[in-house]
Image (tube, rainbow, N blue to C red; front, side):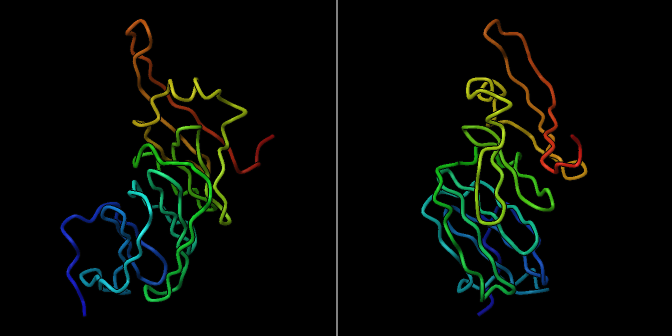
Length: 177
């Protein structure tokens, strides 16, 4: 019952135990462990919203959608259990999704969203107003990490058509006062 990977798969990520995960539309697919050519249909999980990006921290797969985020946890593709996080925090940019080692972060409509321990929350509400955040053009935000800190690069044109670009670093580790 091994299927070849779908041509429409996006967001390929490596998971523990040799599994890989990817998505197409509202569906998440998992490969057989250590067999990236084998993607059995029976391992697929379906979300209520279109998927934008996938991220992994530890053994947790974070599924960022155009609506509510999900997590999937398991040690093998046949044991993956998915749970919807009941918070409307859509992902605006697949390129903003970053594995911080202890959590996954992505650009949402209200600010930078961090998913950890089965909870999703906006962590920039004390740093940016919603209007300031939206001015950074979060749908085109490119994310990365450095020593467990989120690095976001943005580019937009302001009201006077002047190009504004920059990079911000957000420390969520608590290592520095």
